[in-house]
Image 1 (tube, rainbow, N blue to C red):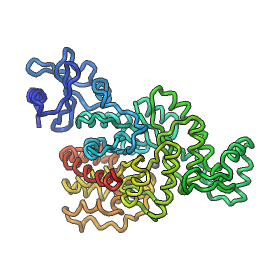
Image 2 (cartoon, helix red, strand yellow; image 1 turned 45 degrees about the vertical axis):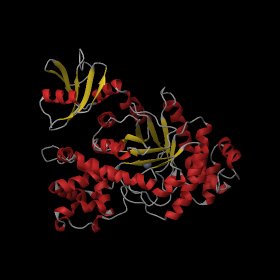
Image 3 (cartoon, helix red, strand yellow; image 1 turned 60 degrees about the horizontal axis):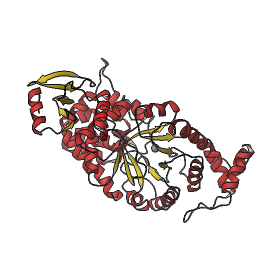
Image 4 (tube, rainbow, N blue to C red; image 1 turned 180 degrees about the vertical axis):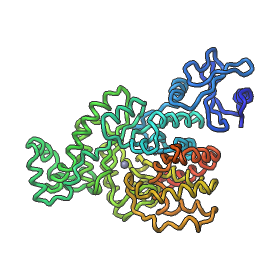
Length: 488
Ligand SMILES: [Zn+2]
């Protein structure tokens, strides 16, 4: 580790610290004892646009600054490959959510040589709130990792599960290249459980021109793909009741906020947060309506049959999944966008089918699994800290369930006091423990001591900073397994 500035400047000059030149200046990210910092050498006024301190080493001006959002913006100006880009048209794209802001380096190494386009900065507002981070910070972390890894093949930034115009404006203002619109508040889930007569009565209450529009276009027709279902009256009534508000909301959002940004945006419509799985006929009608209204769709996320719970494998009948997924994939292909698979962490049972049926044209989102890999490193390297985190998670699991739904019970998790240190990481191989630890990430990061200081956050970051290579190796192995099973 280099600490004094002259040695650092020498190491940059000799190439033992990787750097990139922009005009007369040389930029490098350097590991200091506590944290990484941006170091810029050379130039007449080095770092005038940068946040940090100006100093000197052997007559050369040197600038040392934090990995802040302001410095990330400067980096993007000097090195355009560090700015996010849209990915429409790219076949396999992978969302790699990084809740701690330190996983992107490992993620980039995991995808190396696999032809995968990574969406590194992928975060929902819920995740921002639970981790106490901002869109600016999330994007900066990705940009610095891209620079540090010397990765030049492009990455995306996804404002995930955004619901309101303000949330969308915020992500766009920060330079995000993908917007995932969450229509769950416009989807009428109550219509799914109505009796036929009740549903028909409610449908008849809709404006006549709206009903005519749907009936003329879809009634009695087959979804135009191999094996596509016929849209009979009962089906159409329900689809219109459940989705028509979401359809018009999405069209409005696209034309008022997305199409007017002046740059291409990957627009994804997510209808995965519904109570029941998405009828392929509903998927078709929703997408057809959007496209006919001029919405440019990069991807669409249906809800699939079975359960996609956080951080564990698929729950359900894989044969049934495959049958339904094949239809969704054909509809997406026919209409010219990609299927997006949400909660894609650890769904190893269905990944081979997802890869094969989409012929590798698919978007898969992961996030929680990288947090669990971080906990695996802590379990292996700092057992005492892990024990505290584990006990805290279990004590707060009911509270954490307010944010995420899980199906496992924490009562089956083997007791901490009878588990020796060298077996602690085994918790990360059990679904019950994975889920309890997964959903409590926000409570862990935001936990405070009685004096109001962070209880765990600093120690978590310090441990993962010290064992950065172990974390990267864990991610290479685990995200690699995702890609292997997806056929990438
Ligand atoms: Zn989702």
